[in-house]
Image (cartoon, rainbow, N blue to C red):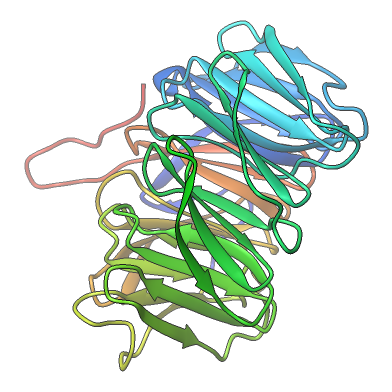
Length: 358
C-alpha cells in the first residue's frame, strides 16, 4: 500500500494517540473547542476522550435501542445530538455526558440530523418528513411529505434547509415556512453537499454519477463514469473544489469560472479500496480521505483540482469517519473495529517551528 505501514504515519501526520470502543465506531467529532473528542458506536455506546491525551473522560451505553445511527455536534461544541433505530433523538451536554432532552418521533430509523450554522435549530429526518426543533427541543417546523424517504439534508444558511430524495432537491425557509426552490432530477439521490455560500448543490446518484446545480444561474450538469455510487462528497471552505468518492480514487472537480463542465478532474490515487469518508480542513486546501482498506491520506489541492499527498497512515480497518481538529492541527479517524486514532498534523515552514495540537 504505497509504503504506508500499520500505525506508522508518514509526511505531515505524526503519532498522536489511539483508543478502542466496544463496537463498530460509526460517528465522531470534536467538541468543547477541540478539548474533547466524541465517538459513538453502533451498539449505542457514547464515549468522550480528552482531545490531547486520549484519556477517557466519560462513557454511556445503550443510548438508542437497536443501535446508534447519527450524531451532530452543536456549533458551540457544548452540546450534541444523537439519533438511532429507536426513532428517538437525544440531546446531550458535552462536558459530562448528561442527557438534557429526549425527542420521540415514532417507530422508524432516524439516520440524518444536523444543527443549523447558528445553532438555533436542529433538523431531523424521519421517513418522508423533516422536522426542525429549537435548542430547547420544541418542534419549530415540519416539512410537507416528500415523494420518497429523505436521503440527505444540508443547511445553506441558518434559515434555509435543503432536502434530497428521489427525483428532487427542495430548499425550505424554515422561518417563513415556504419553499424557496425545487430542483428536479430523474433519479435516486443518495448523498448531497452544498458549497459554503449555498449556491452550488452537488448530489451523488444511484446511477453512479454526480449531479450538480448552480442556483444563481440555473446551470444543471452531470458528471458520469464513476465505478460505484458517489456516497461521499465534500466542498472546500471556499467552494472552489468538490471532492467525490465512488471508487478507490478521490475525484476532484474544480468550480472555477464555469467549471466543472469542459474540465478534466484531478484524481488522487493511493487507496486500494473504495473511499469511505472525506473531510476538508477548516481553512486552506487540505483534504483528508479514508478508505475501506483502512488507509488515511491527507492531500494538498490546487484550485484546478489537482493535488499531492502530504501525509498517510493506516487506521487498522475500514475507516468509517474522519474529522479535523477545529484548528486543523490534528486529524482523527474511527474504524469498523471500534478503533480510534488521532494524529498530530504538523506543517514545517521556513519561519515557524512544527505546530502541534493542544
